[in-house]
Image (tube, rainbow, N blue to C red):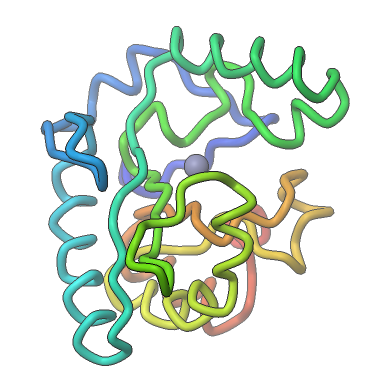
Length: 186
Ligand SMILES: [Zn+2]
């Protein structure tokens, strides 16, 4: 199987060895912090960013991408404390079930009308109208919106307008044209 097409979710775990197959590079995120991302994913993101700016005058950037197992564990614990177990696992993946382990997933942000990039989940949801415009360009560069609003029953995740996943143009186009999420394609 093409490693870029891997399905990762609560029922399809990956291990740390599999994650090592991805070529991670270091880049700067929206606030100048050094983060890691998969190389091809970044290349395609830059093209997406360029077109969205040119055609829609919307400025997008990267909030974060790669997270190792340890970091994911830390996030889970924090969410359980904040929201309780039930809601926490709808918001955060347990280690081994997150696409962020591969560097193929990007949480993107968009510039708000005040010139700053949206950061918190509340700020990101408030920019939903802009995200809906951006989503139309994803498949052209091999990305899918991983957790769409009308697929929460299937993905078992709340709608995340900011979480995009590189999967390659073939599957991305299929998902987009048939309005299917990754679980329905596989
Ligand atoms: Zn994400």
